[in-house]
Structures are given as structure tokens and as C-alpha cells.
Image (spheres, rainbow, N blue to C red):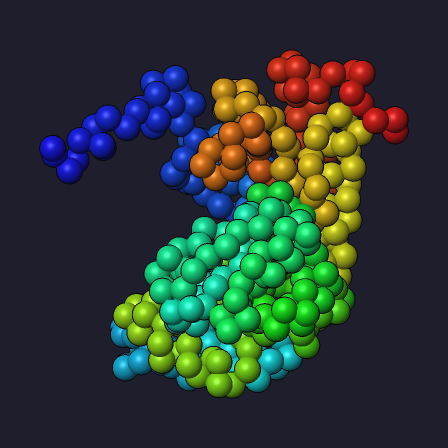
Length: 401
């Protein structure tokens, strides 16, 4: 049997291409915050994780350019050996203070952060108890380690308690959840999770990639928003969302971070964050720490967009954040909706199995603080027009204004 036979037999992408419905790996010719150019067509970007628009902030871009001038384009090595710059330690110290933790360390990507931190922590006899909707990097981090994995139904505290109750008392227990779930746009029930954490003597890791910079009075994320920062043992996150850069981090107690730093294979065997990415993250942190106005604009846009979609009759599920899914529940209709949105100048992300379970297919949209009222009004008009033509919404399903 040829090891490549499975590649020849796999026809998912071939069928999408043949129907001109292929939505992935689309090269953007231009990218300028809330507007992009794709295949020569100007489009309003409704699929970006750049929630605060900082990837095009002039101060952030200038900081990145200055770092390249001083340090070059690469750190040219792993953190363990020659790849640690003063910029790395500066960012780590700033993050630890910002997140009210003893220490923080940064990785080259958010994916590598979860991969390295979780696999390092889970030894034989340890158990990770995870929400079924967590990011793939969490699952991969558990698989790379030698511990066991138990999954509980999404945000189901009874199921979480049943799973915790089933674990032998002598086993180490690590509860892992996303702060903001990246497909549904809802948040973890952190108050209840913290209660169960104490009841069953577990530890808690919150991946707050989509919460940091967005939630909380000071932008410290989901844990600040629910007032459980002190009870959260580890926070991981990514610089590719609200920070408008690239990289990831984990923050927690001194001994734990020290252990991860020397045991995480994805840190030891990867080149470190580039100078431009670190400098951009530091500059973005300056803005996030004083970003009340940016967050206020983001939330005003979020409420406008989500409430308008619901009034039209779209199903946005459980979303309470700038991540707003439009639930379709069928793969062909999802791709047709996405295609017509694109043809009308709106960039969105079609999400189908295996990213979501079959029957939960959706269009994933996300709102930015830099979206103008005119842009959102235009997008909403297009959504209503296409949603009606495809019978995704109908006059009888619309909520009263």
C-alpha cells in the first residue's frame, strides 16, 4: 500500500475547486485594517482577529520597523541558546505585571505556547479535563504529553463535575478551557469552573487568546472580566489577535513558568519570536493598557452588528463577544452564502466539519474597533439581501425592531 494513496483518494478540496467554492488559503493582494483586496476586488474585512486594529496602528508599525533596524529580521536561534534578546525579557516582564502573575514567557506562536506548556506539565498519572470546544492546540498539547484527557460537554458544569469526580484523588488534575471560544464567540463559565477547581483540588489553565485586550475593564481578558484572576493558575494567549502581532505567551507562578521554560519542546527546539513581532507586541501592550476608548468602540460595533443580525432573523448562537457566528447548519448552503458574500465585497470565513460538528456549519464573522458605521451598515444590507435570497432568513423569523 502506497503511503501517499490517502492523498490521491482525498477529494474534499478537489470537489470545492471544481465547483469554484474553494475558500481557503486565499492570497490577499492588499490589507489595510478593515479593508482588503482579494482577486482585484476591494472587500470589507469581517473575518479578522485584529480586534483593536493594531496591526495597522502607526505607532506599532514604527516600533516593528525600529526593531528590524536594530536587531535585523530574525533572532537567529532558539530562546535556550542565542535567540533571547533584551526585547524578549522586556515583553515578558511587562506581561507578568499586566496579567498580575509572577512570571511570563513568550513563544513564537500561540499554538506553540499551548503545545509546549501543556505537554510539559502533564506527566504519567495526570489528567487534563477540557471543554469539548477548546482550540486544537490544547488537544495537540495533551497528545504530545503522557497524561490522560477527559472532555466535558461545552460549558456543562454538571458534566465537568462528573469528570472530576471520576478521577482518582492521587492524580494531578488540570482543567483547561478557552476564555472566549473562537467559533461560538461565547465565554467559559469561569466562576463555576473555579468553584469546581477548588472542590476537587485541581489546577486551571485558561487560553485567553481571544479575550486579552478585548474583555475586562483594563483589557486583561476573561479572567479579569469574571474576577477570577487570582484563582486562575495559568493564562496562555496569542499576540496575533488583539495585539496585532505574532507569538504567544504563558503566565503563572515562578516555579511553574521556570519548569515550562526548560521542559517545553516547542520553545527549546524553535527559533524565537522575531524582533519586529516582539517590538510590535510591546507597543500594542502600551495601547491596550490605556485602550478604554478602543474597547468601547469595539463593543459598540459588536452590539450594533450582533443585534442587527438577530433582528433580521439570523441565528448567532450563544455569542457574547466580537466573534459572531451565523449558524447555517449545512455545508453546501454555508459555501454558497460565503461565495455570494465575497462576490458582494464582504470577506468572511466559512466553517464546516471537522472544525465544527456536522450540522453546526457556520459563517464566522468578527468585528473590529476600526470598522466604520458606514462599513457595518453596508455589510448588514448585504447579509440581509443574501440571507433572504438563500432562505437563511425569512420575514417570519425576524425579531421586532
